[in-house]
Image (cartoon, rainbow, N blue to C red; front, top):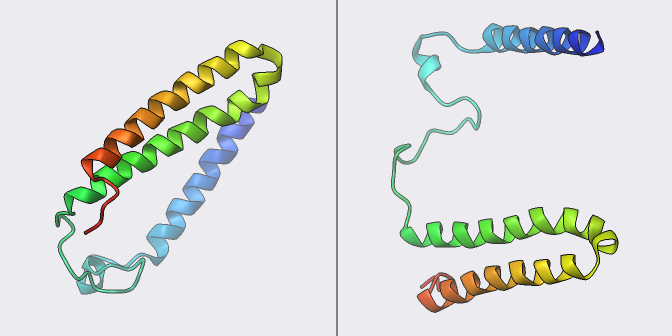
Length: 112
C-alpha cells in the first residue's frame, strides 16, 4: 500500500515537472533551436573530435573510481571478514597498479 502511494506521488511530481518544462520552454520558432541551458552559442559542432589522449586519461580516472567504489564497502566489512578481505583487496589494488604502470609506460600521463 505504501509503495503504491509512493509511486503515485513520484508520478504526480514527474507530471508537474514536465508541465513546468513545457510551460517555460521556447516554442518551435527561432529561439527554439538555440541553446538555452548555458546561454552561449556553441563554438564548434556537437560531434567534434577529441584528442586521443583524453580517452587514456578518462580510462585511468575510471580505474581510480572503480577502486573507490570497491574500497568503501570493503572498509565497512574488513574487520568482520578478516585476513581474507585484506588479501583480496591487495590483489585488486595490484591489478589496478599494473594498469597504471602500463598506462604510464605508454605515455598516458604525458600531455605534450
